[in-house]
Amino acid sequence: MDFKPITTAVNVDQIHRLFASRTIPSPIDPATDVVFGAYDEKRLVAATAAVPTRHNNKKALWVKFLFIDSEYRHQDAGFGLMQFQRSWALTKHYKAMIWAFNPLDANLAKLYFHDLGAVANAFHVSPESKPQYGLEVVWRLNDPYVKSLATQKRVLNPLNSVPLFFDVGNIGQPVAQEIAFDTEVSTAYRVEIPFSIMNLEQFSLAVIGEWNQALNGIFSQGFQKQYTITDFDIAEGRCWYVLTASTPWYLYVVECSDNTLYTGITPDLKRRLKLHNSGRGAAYTASRTPVQYVGTWKFLDRSAALRAEIAFKQLSRERKLRHISTELNFRGSQFLLPDAS
Image 1 (cartoon, helix red, strand yellow):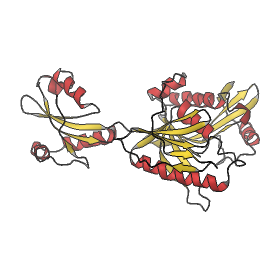
Image 2 (cartoon, rainbow, N blue to C red):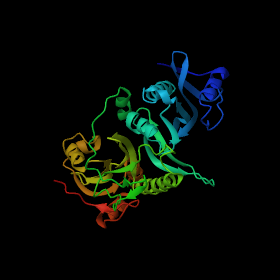
Image 3 (cartoon, one colour):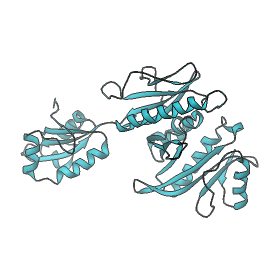
Image 4 (cartoon, helix red, strand yellow):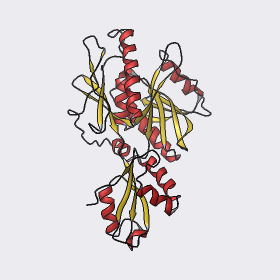
């Protein structure tokens, strides 16, 4: 199979003819859109188009569509085409690709999350009279896991013990379980959908509407609790999304041997303290060992902890000590004093 850019209006017309039964979300403009195709000899079997945008203040591509001929869905046409697009994007210094899709499409969910390593933590519902539901997918092009999947290397991740939010009822409807997102209980949860729900002949519009509303509710809850969709697995005729919690990061303050303070962030407090006391934690503390924690604050992820670190370092020594001695919350995080052993 060959993958190549589509640059002329004639080839763009091929896309419209090939997917005449599908609605292309918006017109293709060869002058601005980045368009690629997968070819089996001269036959166009898959196509994708994207437009340059920004994501987290970095260069990114918004993918307008990915269409795959039904005969080629299980022949890696989509995987190969997306990897070709990724390689091109990296040469142009793009950091991510972003798109939205119907979360009830199990085939695309498997491709995006399981095969490509994309993630999602946003769910959108259009305000139209007939709501359209979509997951916003982010594919971080330089992520180590994404790189490993590009060579089709995969780390096995058994999911048998992961709590399941939904079972599929006898007519395909969502049957909720009495559980809630809680990192103290589990750092991962599964959300099952019927494998063939996109087949309208098998499932009624009412059942599909139930699933859309159920997914909207459960994904919104998970995202609010800082869980992210990281996988979509299929096994023995069943399929489910996997949501995992963000790794918590800590803002910490250590007191050095000369009574000065040092502030930093880490996901592992015990390891970080050992590094400081071995002289490898930071240049400042290397000559001021031993150090000991005098206060820490737990944040949901590295970005939140980093923002807190910047803010805490701007405080005067007197205000820092006041936060520590009175065990004040900082930027919404509760004061903690970890075991230094």
